[in-house]
Amino acid sequence: MSEGILDKISKQAQGYYRNTPVIILGSGASAAFGMSGMGKLAQHLVANVDVGDLLGDEKASWHRFCEKLKAGIDLETALHDVPLSHELTSKVVSETWNLLAPEDFTVFEGSLNNSSFFPVGKLLRHMFRSTATELNIITTNYDRLAEYACEQEGIHHYSGFSHGYRGYTVKKDYLSCSRQVNIWKVHGSLGWFTNSDGVIVSLNNINKIPDGLTPLIVTPGIEKYRSTHKEPYKTIIHESDDVMDDATAYLCVGFGFNDEHIQTKLVNRCANNGASVIIITYELTEATKAFIASKSTSKYLAIEAAEGNKSQIYSSLLDGSVEVEGEFWSLNGFMSLIM
Image (cartoon, rainbow, N blue to C red; front, side):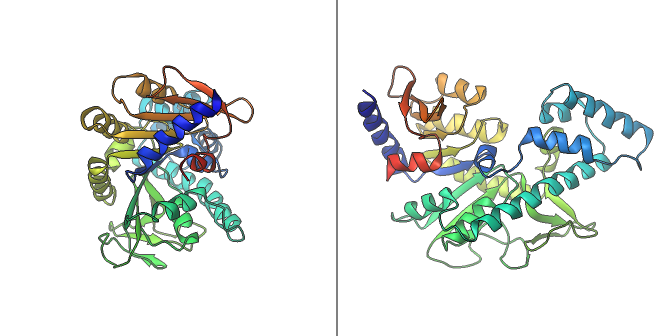
């Protein structure tokens, strides 16, 4: 039975894959490399944000915010419930960078002597064996793992900025090349900064926040919706919307369907345009399960980890979920179904 199911699922995955899916990377894709998620970030903020120089009202807001986190409320909900001042938000952004940037550098260093370190790189290389000359990744992650994966495979990537130690905003066709991966980082990047005059720059060789510059990463909560109306997010989101609207297939890796903007686009493309979606992750979120259980999509394949060396498979071709041997929920495991 298991072999028959896997053969059926493999053919389904290959059929969707042939449509050159847009790749959507969520936090689960980075967690596999030891990058901190929202839980660790919340703990880091409570322990490290210094409010000693702030006014009484701001200190009171921070105390309420920390109490919510300590009570087990997730970071995004806490930031919705307790809006923070501009000064506090700046401190949260800086400490978020201080936590994640060293982890990002550690991943990069770990890849230098391992040519197969990034499974997504192997996936991109395989996708370029077709007639495709341009691929698209949309990610909510701040880290640069997608960029590292491209460079390890010798693939040119574009993320909104020119290349070099000091990059500036440019159009995606500013260079001509035979193959290109566009990485649309809708919540910002650890390498993006702005100064007090609003000048935006990409810096790729620093290990601390430069004096006078502020990281361009969007925090969860209300601030996310305020910031994304500004540059460079406005342009990046506009471009990623066009990519989503043109696609007929999507491959979600570690994406929990908790980003309202991307999720809304996906739901509507699947419901109104018959797009197909593949979801692979360690654990499906409740939002993901609700999506595949609804009538929003009639073409889906979702895979999560099961106990032991097994996977739980949900498919629009099956009456119910099935458990099979093999770690097909991981990107390496999934690629064994399509290659």
